[in-house]
Structures are given as structure tokens and as C-alpha cells.
Image 1 (tube, rainbow, N blue to C red):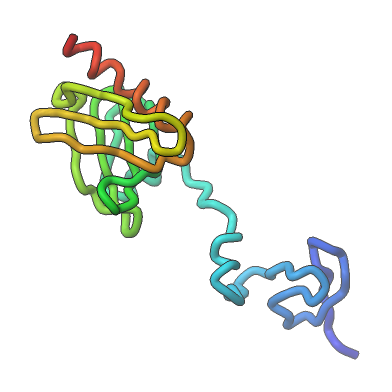
Image 2: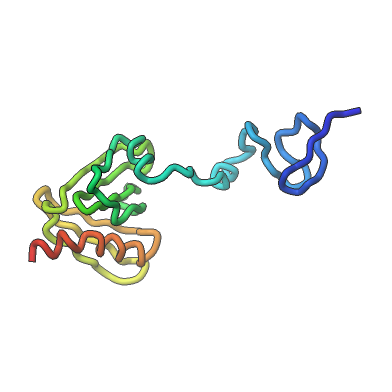
Length: 156
């Protein structure tokens, strides 16, 4: 008699040593992904954002609140953008290395250029200017612009 276990996804019986259910494709704990697509199907990391930022070497102060966090392009590189009530931080998409950090006071101008999928967000400050493109959606772009609105309002 062979040892079997029940798949928690489809309730079919499979061999106890199986790493993948032959009926539905469920991956039992510890099973390596079969293909590149399986990496994209993995559940998202459930860490809260402040804890994730700590892993990336950035700590939020007690009075610092996240106003926006999202993915976009700067030049031809994908970056994560963090806007809090105190600062603007750019992280690399891979390796989560901090690229650039500005205080909100250093941001002098926030301007949305274009509309729809081609819209971009141009930021100017003491250290130069940067254009953010290819947000997940136009709504995300506007959320980032709104999060930077206090910086824009403080200058005008």
C-alpha cells in the first residue's frame, strides 16, 4: 500500500511524496517552481510596508506617514517611489537599493504632463529634475502628484 495525502486545493488523493498535485497543479510546501510563470503566481509578500522599508534600509520616523508607494519608470529604469509627509525616496526595482532621497522642502515644482497612458510626472527641486513615467495607472500618477501637493503648495 502506498502512502497518500489529500490535496488541500482539490481534495484528490496523491502520493505522499508528491510536490505538485497531478490533478490541479497545487504546490505543496517546499516544492520548487516548475517554470518562470510559477514565480509570478506566488502570493505577494505579506510584510507591512514599514517592515519592508526596514528590510530596504529605510526607517520611518514616528511622525512620518506614507502618502504614496508605487512602481514607475525614471529614464529607462523601473523604480519604486515612496512619498511620505516628509520626504521623497527612489529605490531600485531589483535589490531595493536606495537611489535618491529628497526632503519635500527640496521639491519645488510638481507638474503632470500629458494625459492617459502617456502621462508623466515632472519633479523639479534643488538637486535637479526628474520625470516619472509608466505608472501602473493614471490614477496612481495622480495619487503620487497629490501626495507631493504639500511640497508644491509650500512653494507657492
